[in-house]
Length: 424
Ligand code: BJ8
Image (tube, rainbow, N blue to C red):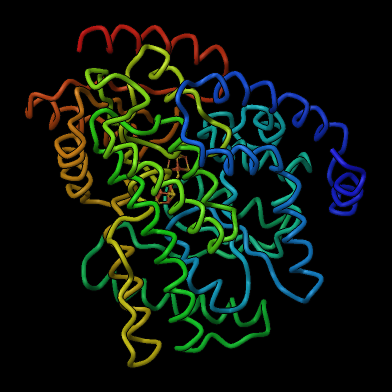
């Protein structure tokens, strides 16, 4: 890494020794998981480049933005509305942790029986390892699962953390409460940035984020083709990068990827034979660099055709956000209305998520569904009981897994995934 980046990291208060250890390990892992794949779309070169610059170029852009007086908001959930952050002239970066590397640091203060996603993210902050965390002016948490809810109280001791109060049901009364939260959030964005969020700025920001969501939806639509034009690993990488890349650039590059995939579909060209077993992933998000599950699945010769996850279809659930032209209240109602179509297991009742999984299994012609939840994630672990039953009732083979980011776990998961794919 260049001297310029090293200086930038030092200025951000990065623990250089630990950061060097992480950055030293990542290229080999990426090469092993990604670069050995056959028939990758050429347009994946962009995403490979972004990974090669993972703590470089984008962080530099964020630092430049701050030098111009801009603010950076760190987020952890698709329910935190990026549109509102962008409308205030700030940048949102998704901070979810997907590396086992930082988990032991978090366990020095957090209980062990928390999901790896929370521990990994908190460990990144505590250990001073993640420049995105360091560059963030404020962290936006939300009251989704209990693990996150209580973690924000602790995280606030290390970095200013603001919490959005997301209801756990989706009745009209809950929707009204959430619209109130969106209004309160506008106040926070205005206070942090010093900029007003106006109907115009929100309309523009909503259009920008709609573009990003539409590009992702298009990518998923193309994955319905047989043979699959892109591996599940590559699609996941694109989705993971959507959380922190510049939204306009990401949209453009992802549409270029989709153009290439469209040509592949027309030519009947795929990354796996047309008769490769098709797997639908369902479950907890897979933040970068957690690639274990698709990697294990695709090494069996099967292909992941879609992910029902917040690193997947839940990112663009509900389609475009409507942009009414009669003021902020109507715009916020449209945002809430779109968001409430994201079926996170933190909600009850949540039958719509089960319907989503059944629908996706049909639409993507999945031969089987693998439901994975991180250990100690109660919402997804518990919901897997009903998901499994619904899939069995529909005659769709299903494997329910639970695990974390460790190598030991990967070994156990491999055995179960291989056995499952063989039965299909
Ligand atoms: S809308 S999925 S991004 S909350 S894995 S931290 S639930 S214990 S991540 Fe999520 Fe928003 Fe829902 Fe999506 Fe808790 Fe489970 Fe950990 Fe989780």
